[in-house]
Image 1: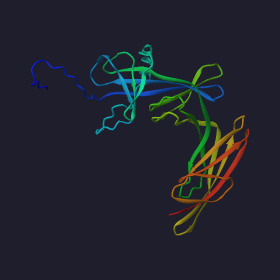
Image 2: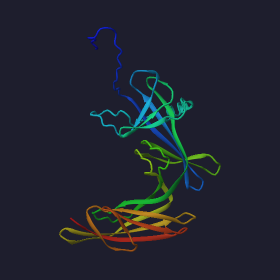
Image 3: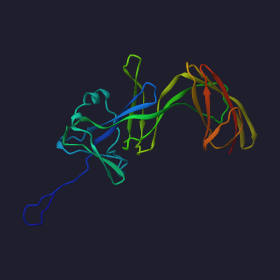
Image 4: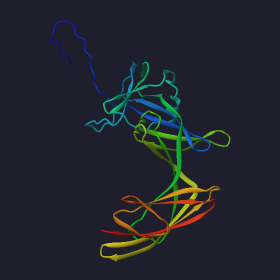
Length: 299
């Protein structure tokens, strides 16, 4: 409702916020044959569920955490159907890459040209690509030293973790990253996927792809005794087996909560933070190693 109290016609530009127009990033990473590099390609998917079609529109995407005094998420990840997304993957591939600029404390991507966002439609645009990014693959076993008594051993699997530095000279918006690697016939196969948060330039990205098939661990509690009214000593034995045809380096991350200190250990561990005791093992082909440790807990 507008009321013109001036003489003559007036030109008015109206700006408003509409909900249910969202976007998210999808990263496709292709792992090299020796698993030392990835090629990273980034797409953005725009979803219009606002009830209106925007014809021949100028589109800008803002990446960052914009605070809203509401429970509504303006730009976030929505549970889209994969088959529908892929059917629209090349809808706007000819428009060229969006141009990025700094905006306030966020990053803004201006889509080149104009596009039509139809109601209840998804549209995918290519955002950026970076080739030959160095990556590091590691195997990490994450387990917890519980305060109650346990008699049965517990089988564990190692997480397969990829780390790389964002040296693309572009910030990476939050989204899902899928990693592919070619098999022996040259066909790309999914190696795993994970989600990442907003990653600034030169920051590190760490993703977990799955569980290592040929690395196993069996953990058993070996000690449980009270050493005072407010103190407890617990001990564990972790047997790690490498079933691969090649040597590997594995990492054990034992979570220990509360006031604790190590009283004895078979290998030299490192207290990486207030609740993590870390061990690094080098295992030869088909080699088995055993790590034992005891900690004293106070409360």
